[in-house]
Image (spheres, rainbow, N blue to C red):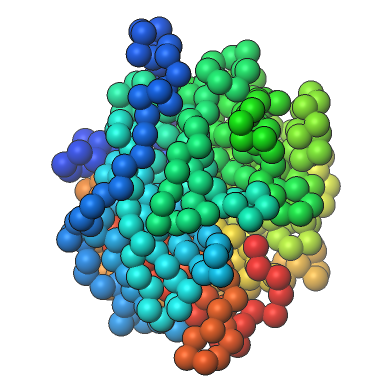
Length: 447
């Protein structure tokens, strides 16, 4: 299966249209060259601009399709035809969603304080083109920020941009971070995703950076945004374009590193953030299902099991979503394989709340599973709820009939039509924002 991911991405690039020339997984890009423009602080020429008039594209409603236990609340098109990761901001007594906009712009913000009546706040773009598929929100005290991952379109501007959104209508660029201004001994810049580690008070403290050029994980101390420093680095011995960190999930004392063809690698969070030499809790390659590249992972609530997912190897009935038993880190074992009946597409980003697994399953919509690990030798994962977003297979932004529909979801307690509920905010790749509700509200803490 070596190089399968690269071949898939090359095919998607050939099939793509307009200016969309890359697949969903990152295409490795050489590090910036030592030209005067590249060696200068990229923030010197890098800025954020408000888009004065939102486009009027990609507004076909994904509502009025089949659902079970998920109620349609609202649909808000962004006007853009490529919407990436989604996250939530709560500031000034109001609630907002933010979605990255990939090639077309930087990000889109909507006010969802009343989930039944979401309204656009605005969209912003970089003044130098870059691919921004990932966004993560974090707070420090009463101030709110976005960490936006940039892959370069021009081989100059890349890294992690931090933008203050305490006033969501007036975002302010704090800085653009890469090896050039974080004290790194090994150059890095090309960033596909980032994850935020919060302290005991919920303040954003560290940013975990997926660097594509060097295929490793960089950890930045952002407790003082005026002096961001790289404090650790993790890499596998065979890091290359087929062995790179795609994404990271931080839950409790562990860091779950989705290392593509190297599988899932689990780290001790305290060790990483103390700047100590990193020893994985499991052996590299011990959680690496044959034929899959690990794109995202999320542990069960008890930390005894972990879900791993692959997005590119669509070969039904092969399962691209697996459950692993990690009670014995020295000998992880596959415990379950999850697939849909007559699925249209691959699973994408996922999260766990209580005993429920939420999956943005691209064209197959929002899929929710209930897992039971009370008998750890015989765990079960069963369908619990769903919301369809396409009536048939569709061609998304890459000309592929796999990559369209739901990218990812976020959860929050809300009130809908006067009743308490759990709102599910789903980012639709080519349509925008979908808001769903589960009633009664979920009875456990939300991630």
